[in-house]
Amino acid sequence: MPKIGVLSSGGDCPGINAVIHAVVKKAILDYNLEIVGFLDGFEGLVENKWRELQYNDVSGIMPLGGTILGTSNKADPFRYPVYREDHLELLDLSSQAVDNYRKSGIQALICIGGDGTFHIASRLMELGLNVVGVPKTIDNDLNGTDLTFGFDSAVSIVTEAIDRLHTTAQSHHRVMVVEVMGRYAGWIALQGGIAGGGDVILIPEIPFKIKQVCDFIQKRIESGKRFSIVVVAEGSRPEGGDLVVQKVVQESHDQIRLGGISYVVGREIEELTKLETRVVILGHLQRGGSPTAFDRVLASRFGAKAVELVVEGQFGYFPGLRGEEIIPVPMAQAIDSLKTIPLDSPLLGLARSMGTFLGEE
Image 1 (cartoon, rainbow, N blue to C red):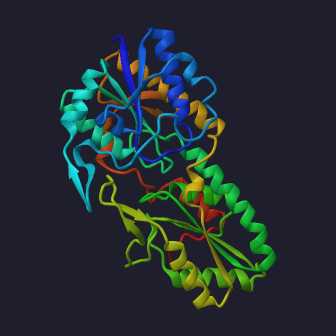
Image 2: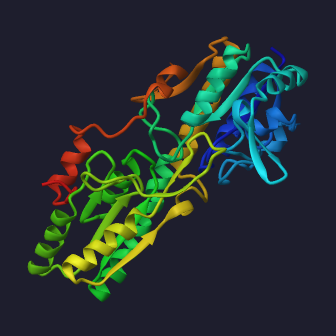
Image 3: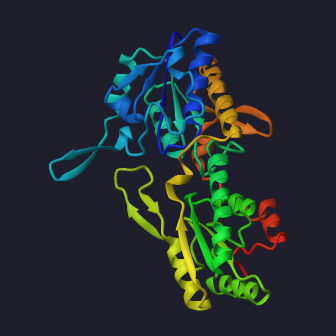
């Protein structure tokens, strides 16, 4: 197996470059392989855009955020967006992607991404491609691994933001509502909220009752605590209510773009409690910047293990973290369902025992 390929697909996050760094160096030093990097995710595979990656090309990239290869969450080869005059067409260009895979001379492809990337990779395997995955998402919602790289970095950013909001909330005696990412899972909100000392944490797994949230905040006021921090996951929703959708992106694997639940929560808190309320949406700040030391090490371990899986012919697998070990996990396990917070999670118990309100009765 003289040549392998690598690409990063889906949303960016801290640690992708650490994976690429490990893949290239492990492949060259341990196995004397050639490496091809496809540009902008599966777009590079469809449009035959790639570059050779030499040892020196990846020197110094580990601390960099983003990805030197570029990425895209709209370049599904099976629903590839093609704009014709004034309308969008979604075409099946998977055969073109397969042809370019073969023309590039690679014998296997390492796909760095989340559930959308793994869905596409699994379908490409059905067409004869040899694929190994690397689990990437700040949302930490992939089954089969205790953690995904990028998550620790996102939680650190959320924690720092909450720390900073505490001082302004306390000074002005306000309620601060902080909206964080996570899609349909509340991992970032829960862990960031606990670490930052959030008074209320609202997550998708527990539909909230806004009256109970307001009653909790009012009791804090009556006890002498003149400010509150409310951490809201973007996928949270009131009991009996719907998700707040910012927009729909037709050409994306996950077409729904969540965002704005914090404004709904903030408006209702202000109306029901008459307390001055401010809203902060952290947005893409959570995706950018340098990875934490933990994520750099985890991403490097994933990248190195991915090369081993390729060499051993364990296609259709990805490296997952189980305890302290990195083990091969079938990609099918990751895309079968999202990993959300179990209602019996010790983290929920920890939050409650620290006096944090989770929006329930």
